[in-house]
Image (tube, rainbow, N blue to C red):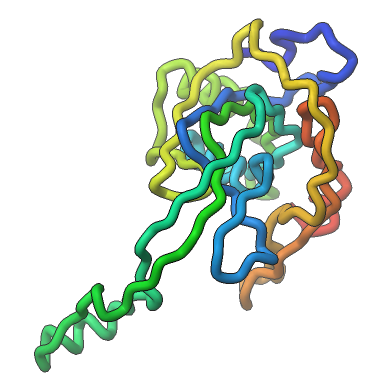
Amino acid sequence: MNSSAGAGSSDQAWVEGWLAVKVWGDLACFTRPEMKVERVSYPVMTPSAARGILEAIFWKPEFRWRVRQIEVLKPIRYFSILRNEVNNKMAVSTARGWARNGGGYYADQDRAQRHTLALREVAYIIRAEQVMAAHARDIHPAKYRDQFRRRVERGQCYHRPYLGCREFSAFFGPVGPADQPIRHSEYLGRMLLDLQYNADGSGKGRAVFFSARLENGILRVPEDLYKEIGR
């Protein structure tokens, strides 16, 4: 699964040293943040969701992932789900209070029906680079690139990756020569790139967005965006 596999089209430009993995699944939902209560998916996987999949497969404190390109392999198809969901999040302190003083939680008293516009039968190629951390500059990055390739070929992961929602499990494997992006272009609007944190790790993360566009089935993430947020 080297980064030059399947090359042959000017639309599929990538850089030597990028890593690639194919991911697919029956269902996916990459929620647009402007939708408050009802979930509406982007037509394409977001870079932050792709990073979560990569970290589920292989993560080390010596490097961080930069998603550079996402390729859509199957036609974009939507479907609707109406599900019962609870309104409030469970807090550990509340559960401990019930254990001491009695009481409990009744889901049927805290339930609401919510609509989800999700994607079905999706498949993508994620292309990304590993950026070494400051404390690991003396480690050759090829070490971790090889480890990632072996884990993908063996189907190994730290936890099961998912496609936007935890209940939408993802499968993954090496990229094959027949895996080609669809011929579809579309402006996707403002899309979440990632969260930006203070240099000392304090405070909450600030959401950083960029103007995303799908060009012949490929969503490209400019490198300078990562430099702006320090990732």
